[in-house]
Length: 370
Image 1 (cartoon, rainbow, N blue to C red):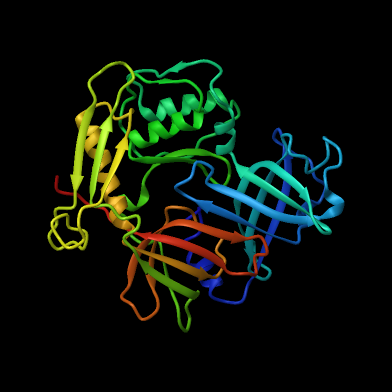
Image 2 (image 1 turned 30 degrees about the horizontal axis):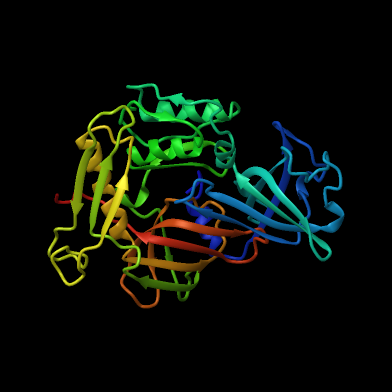
């Protein structure tokens, strides 16, 4: 959760009558340029969609009045450097509002429809993707991967700021990148069993894949009387489930590749490789896996992720702007046993009186057999 999201008074307010709100501001080069004050930019509809397993984690889509179409290149909503910042919260009567920033990113597209203008914006990861290498770039061998990630981002986005990283100790091998800066960051993240992304306030982070890390639920979601969940759909599928992971660390410096395998060898597991599930194999090529230990760690963590997909939930619940990707939740719904899940994606409505949708995957931490 974002800071303050687990405050008991705030959680109690969510379950009681309250007044949620959204304020959208337009900024350019660190300065707010709209003149809408505390009311923010007027809009008629829209949503923020966040997906953890994506370079551009957060995307904003909204509709505004056709009078706001950027007819000139320097207009307020022109897609040439202006960015949108979204703040959402809850007003507790006469008290101080609970408020969080839920989006920051540059306007990507504007299109006039019937009486409205459709606006699309993408979070700051898009700035990393767009700032490709002007020439081949060699990694700084031996630096922590987190330091190399910072260097890659700052070289492409000099105004970048960074949030709190997880403890990642892997060192950077000899690598060469030629075009895709976002892909280079992917290489580092994959080599350290992590995701890289931009937070809601625009800070860049590198964090461990959350459903592979031991954690306890931050909040409890439930349906029925007194609960905040209006609909809940659990799903079990084998489509994206794998029980055999092969990692090949192919290096660009001519070093012999490393190789590692992780399999589900727990005979009591529904995805046991020797059971009725059968064998489903995923092959991963990761040039940032420099040695056998790193390749094996990646294989094990990927196996945890692949097993976590055995059960997932789609939930519609009271709008909670403090929710963050990777949050651990306890879910009790549909008369089923309490399930511990991790937030993989969500959609915040800009019209904050509407419910939000949340997609989760199962928490699967712990050691695995080789």
